[in-house]
Image (cartoon, rainbow, N blue to C red; front, side, top):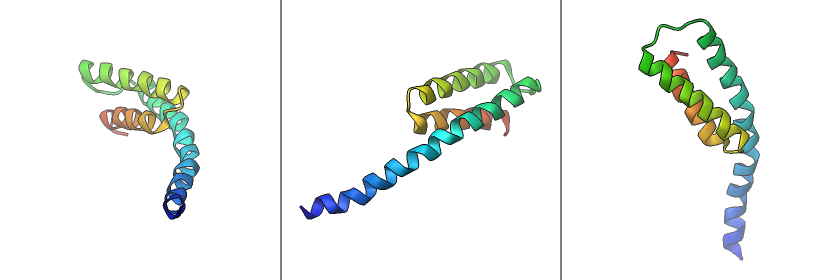
Length: 82
């Protein structure tokens, strides 16, 4: 019985943090799109990887997997230097 009370705060914190991840995905995608529209000077292989990560991030966001979406989008942003 007491173990349930120890786990409950962690579950609540996780549930409350999910909207934060969800809200940052669209913002990150817009930043990536804006950088791509400016013709960044990255290698062809990096550009391919950036586009792959951007598409993956959007797909993960739409499926509700916001933590992995943010990770993919931030990797793309790192490659872009933003």
